[in-house]
Structure formats: structure tokens, C-alpha cells
Image (cartoon, rainbow, N blue to C red):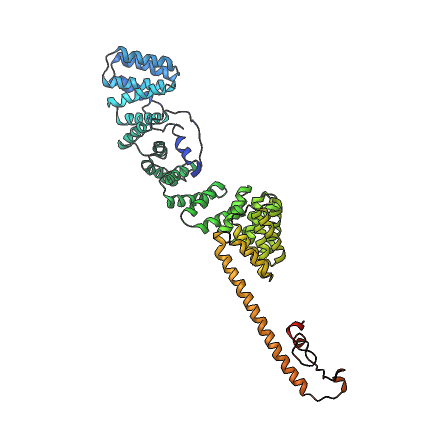
Length: 491
């Protein structure tokens, strides 16, 4: 019997995201090569073991097979099976050959039925029986009867058929279709290991083994396999993407970030979404400055959309990097474009951090007036902070009093109000101390001036009172004669 082949239903390969597809394809991509009995051997055996009449008829049908007359061949075998009393061996030979004819006619279910009957008779030599087991098993897999196909091929292996890369792949794929990942993993490993020994595993073999590791959540093994794939196919972006994802899963976030940077430097990240995600990685891994530089460059180059969300991300990266001056124009653009209160609040915060207090105050007021704030009490607190820095204590107090309206900002606002109260008390105490010191200093100056010798009549006024030369600081408290002014006359 010649080698049986079957047309491929499709082909494909990849890893992780489409690995499941690899399990469903290639089951029928060509039946395994198992050396069947040749036509000459059939003729010899027919002459030796079949009845003369049956042997003669069988030889005629074998010649018709060589000419491809499969319809006539099938009908001929059917007549022989149905019209004669046959020994088990004769029935096995005829069923096997009819199965061959039915296979060629693409009547696969009928071919499977004949060959399974032959196997059940258990009269053929081991070599021929194993060939039928393997071929029938593959046809069963093609018909999606995966468990029966697995059982037949495994029976052939148990009886001496060597496990080849091809058979191991088929068995692994069939187990995968049954969601029997534990049973399929050894075959996927065997196929991979044998292929590596024979000159290198293919992408399909990598993909299949990776699929089983993924389904069984064997992340370290996935990572090791992905490292090999990245090395073997360094230009394939999907390999790098999966590699970075696995690194993150095993807690190697920094390595995952570096892999993404390598992809960027090698030009593998080109969509706006991918570039934005990389910028977010920069922020997550505490390198906002690098992310801001990269994102700004890509926005300027037009590879990242300059929409509100991306501009907000850029501004936040600059803010987190404490690059306030570089954040300000971006934040201003976002705020004026969106007109949203939260964007004005963020802009005001950056102005405050940059020391632009008057602008920050105005922008915080706009944020409050525009509304939409998730925590308006915090915005009132920000406004109070700005006014404190401007020494506008009364206005700051009004802002903090408004912040008392929300529970989440109440404690902070009360703290600031206490601070303002203390600040005012300290200022009053300082002013009183300064007043006392000034008066005391002036009294000393007056005493010294009175002790000085009069050298000119010009030192007296028209009423004959001595005019003292006192420091300017004494003017609010003493007259020119050194007398303390009453409260009502103080300037």
C-alpha cells in the first residue's frame, strides 16, 4: 500500500496571542510517513496466502489501482467482501485495500471504518498494522475525533513505531484540541527537542510548546522559550512584545521596561498608541523626564497625536519630573483648549510651583469658576496657599474658610486658619515689640540730645523751646522738643 497523503487545510504559526491556532492547524497537513506494504509485496503475499481465485482477482484490482480507477476498484473490493466466504486474513487484506480506494475518493469516514475493522481483526503483520494505526489515527484527527486518533497512534508507538517530530507534533496538537494540556505538553516538548537536535526547531514548534506553557501557566518556561525566540528572530516585533509582557509577569518590571526601550530604539514601536504606552512606562518606572522628552519628540514629529489626552500626559510627565517651566506651556494649551476646571487647576498648580503667584491665583479662580472639579475643597486650599505666599492673609483666610465646606479638605483648611491666626498674632507681637524698641531708642536719643551743649540760638524755636535733632523713626512718637505725643496726634 502506497504512502497516504492528505491535502493541507491551512498553515500558520505565531506565538502566545495566536498559539491556540497552531493546535487546530496541521493536524491534516499531510499524514505521517509510515512504510506500508508495497503493491509488489501484496502480490507476493496474495499468491502465497490467498485462495487462487481471490488472489487472481486481487491482482487485477491492484493493477486498476495503479491506473487510478478508484470507483471501479472500490466496487470490485466490495463485491469480493460481500460475495465470498473469507478467512480473517483475506477479509483484512480486502478491507485494507478498499479503505485505500475510499481514501483516494475522499470518502474519509468510510476509509476510517474499513481500516479500523482491519485493525480489530488483528491478523496483519505488526509493520502493516502499525502503518494502518498511524494513518487511521491521523484521519480520525482530521475528522476531529481527536481522542480516537490519539489512542490509535499511541498504540502504534507502544508496538514499536518510533516517535518522530511529525507524530509528536500531531499528538500534541490533538491533545491541545481536547484542552488536555497536561497530556499534550510531553509531546510538544519531544517535538521541540528532537527538532532542535535535528537542526533547529521551527517557528511552529516554538509556538506549539509556548502554547502549552501558557495554558499551564508555566511562566518561567515561557520566559525561557521567549528568550530563545527573541535571539533567533530578533527582527520580529511580536516576540519582543511577548517577552516584555512575560518579564513583567515574573516581577522583572525594570527588564520589561528596558525591552520596550530597545524596541523603541530599534524602530519597532511606530503607532501612536505604542509610543504613548512607552511614555507611560517611563513614568511608571520613575523616569518621567525621559518619557517627557520622548513623547514631546514624537508629538513634534507627528507620530503621536497632539490631542488633549496626550498633551495632558506630556504635561504630567514634565510635572513629575519637576520641570515646571517646560510643563507650563503644555498645561496652558491643554487648559485653554479644553476649558475644563480640572485642567485649569493643574495649570495653576504648576504656576504656583514655578513661583508665578499672581498668575497661579488667577488660574485657580478660573478653575473654581469653571467647575467640574473632583475635589473643589482642595482647589480652595491651593488658592489659599498662593495667597499666603503673597502675604494676602485676609484673602487667604476667605479661601480656607470655603475649604471648610468639604470634609476631606476641612482638616487641612483648619490647620491653615490656625497658622494664619498664629501668623497674625506674631505679626502683632512683633509690631508691638518694634514699637517699644523704637520708643525706647527715641527716649535714649532725646536724653543724649538734651545733654548736648547748645552752640547756637537756632536750636530754639520762636517760643524759646529747644528743638532737638531726633531720628526720623521718632517722629510718630515724639515732637521736636522731645515730648511724647498723645495718641490722637500720632501720624
